[in-house]
Each structure stands twice: as structure tokens, then as C-alpha cells.
Image 1 (cartoon, helix red, strand yellow):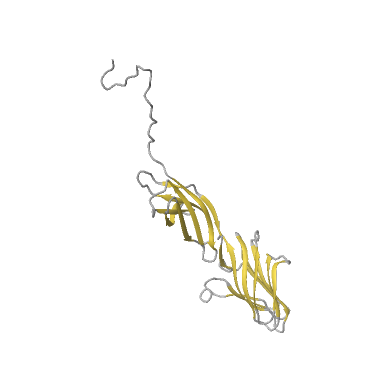
Image 2: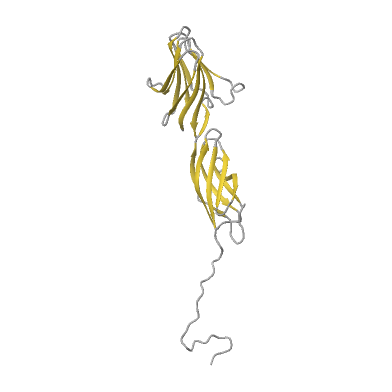
Length: 251
């Protein structure tokens, strides 16, 4: 005989034991990719996942750690599609930590991804940080175009007398590449070159004929003081080269 409402185990059977319910549902966020997709304008593209999938169109925020304030700051967002999200933001060159964040959405609490450190290389004007030193031989003149006329801080005129040369040095710390347009305005041939500081051997150079345009580009990993130099090859008046030059940097 059993009491009313009690389970009958006279046949030696037992009741199934159900697992205890979780205290709360959980959601995960993860950065699956981050890269510079436009080094000229500074676009970073971040891809990520949020699982379980939130409602389509949920706002997924991209945070960046700001060292000066020691706080996370939202710099952009994307709208979820299934479990995936893509976020594009424009940032200057930098080395920063990034993470994804999604607000609470019943029955799930807010979720934040693990931070990822990313080196963001962006092209900037060669003279953005000024000229450290300049010099040369035979009346050298290294003239950077002022911001009012050249706001990108990338333009300069390099001049010297016949048989001479002119150089200027810039801080290239945390930069990995150099590129430049150049125009030879003199009455003969001249050479434009870049050097690791005062070292005689050029990293790269180009010989430009009278009144012609050209380009010069090279990798400069490890070079912290880049020298840009114009040298007379064969002319009546000396070298006269105009440049529009850039560095690929994280600063």
C-alpha cells in the first residue's frame, strides 16, 4: 500500500533524476578576424561571432582600449546576421587592444569577447612629425611645404647647386614602408635615394631624367631615422626635386 500521491517503488524501480537547471543562460562573443583593409584612409575591418545567435540586426559594439584614460571606448558597431557580424571603422595608425560587446538580451546576459591586440599600419605624410635634421653640400636647401599649402605634410622641395646634394632626416620609428612620387625640375639628371640615417649605402634609389616624374618605394623595417636625399648626377644648375612622400606606420 502506498500513500496517496507517493510514487510506488514496490517493483524496485526508481524515479528518474533530472539535472538541475543552470543558474542563467550564457552567450559567447569572439573576434574571428581583424585587419587593415585600407591603409590610405585607415579602415579596420573586424569580423566576429556571437553564440547563441542574437536576433538579426542586434547592435554588436567594437571597443578599443584607450591607454591615456585606462578605459574601454566604443569606436563603432555592426548589426548581427545569424551568429556573424562585420564592423568597419576608420582609425589612425596605432597598436591597440580591441574587443566585441553585446548588451543583455533575454534570456541572455551581456557578453564580451577576449581582447585582441592589433597593429594598424596607415600611410601618413613623411613630414608629419617634422624634420630632425638636414644638410648636404653646395648650398643645400630642404624645404617642407607648409601645412597651409600641403596639409598632408608629405611635400617638399630638395635643391642644391651643381655637383651638390641635399638631405633631410625624419623619425621613422614603428614604420615599415616608404613610398614617394617625385618630379625632377632641373636641367639634367638627378638621383633621389633613402638611407638608414647617415649610412652611405642607399636602401633604395632612382635616377630621374630632366623634367620627368617617377616613383620610389621600399620596405624600411627596423629603420628609426630615415634620410631622404637628392644628388646631382649631371646638370647645369644642380638637383631640384619635388617630392610627395609617405610612411606606413602605427603612429
